[in-house]
Amino acid sequence: MDVRLDPALQGFADEVRSWLEEHLVGSFAGLRGRGLTGQEDLAPEVQIEWERELAEGGWLGIDFPKSIGGRECSLAEQVVFHQAYVDARAPGRLPNLGVTLLGPTLMAFGSAEQQQRFVPRILAGDELWCQGYSEPDAGSDLANVKTRGELVDGQWLVSGQKVWTSLAQFANWIFVVARTDPDSQRHAGLSYLLLPMNQVGIDVRPIVQITGGVEFNETFLDGAATDESMVVGGVGNGWKVAMGTLAFERGASTLGQQSSFRQELESVIGLAKRTGRWDDPVVRQELMASHVRLEILRFNQMRMLSALTSGGVPGPEMSIGKLYWAGWHRRLGELAMMVRGASGMIGSDDAHDGHDGRHYPLDREQRTFLYSRSHTIYGGSNQIQRNIIGERVLGLPREPR
Image (cartoon, rainbow, N blue to C red; front, side, top):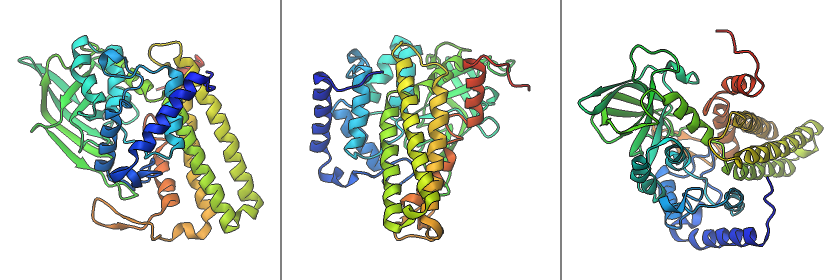
């Protein structure tokens, strides 16, 4: 994957930078460098407004066809956009699952009617989505879902419980993996359903995280209804569609993510130099090892993007990137605490109030350390990613059950 800036790409990068400079003003002026993963220093409502601002500029659907409301950027242009966005220290993006997950899934597996109904509204910032995958007894083991869907008089009635439902309290719709064949087991008999959130049969209960934030929720479904046509990819094909959705999670934005990680590492290095911890050879060695691993991460992500140029749904090699970046960022949180030393255990004036009304005296490094513990679990745990790599990439025997 070659993204060196030829004149056309340079012009595109200048367009992105100019737009950001023109729009990170007024009520958005104070957002630079804020709202990054795990920092929780911006209210979700503010991030939603920024997503709508991006939508008005045509920047939400840069990889979608123009015919559906997108900008139809090349893969190289997508990479340039995400890198320029991070370099401008624009605010951390809301996990807009309609744009990153559901939209691409509908373009790959959905009917023409589903694409026309949902994708333009997603790209206009008019509809937000959440994901109904994990359950209390089926976290990384998606094939073990217990949520059931029954077709009654032209409607799917869905009952069950989903957990870790990101931003469900703000979502208009949810895409749910449910068992629609009561006699099926494991991967068979699952369907991928689209349900409106604003109905009596859905109850959302926030989960307060260790950092005081409430990004995640429990979502209870009790006869939640949706039209018979709201099944993606056909009845019983939910496993295939769900796996395609997970693969879309790791696309062109990965190089922007890597640039954001570089800024975080530079911040920790700067902290080490200001506090004198840089003079400790062990700390300095760990910081340089983190730098080397970040370069490896960048080359891994370039390899992933090269795989995407072949078109279609990304393959299981995307698991390599997720496994690597999750471990790297978790180690960065630990390294930040090593640099902080004893002060990392003490509350800070850089504090925020949590959903439960309590005061959480956590600064940036402390929040990164605590939140990054979850990276190796969400989006497919490290154990699951290793199984995918071993079985589907390397062709090793399946893990004994």
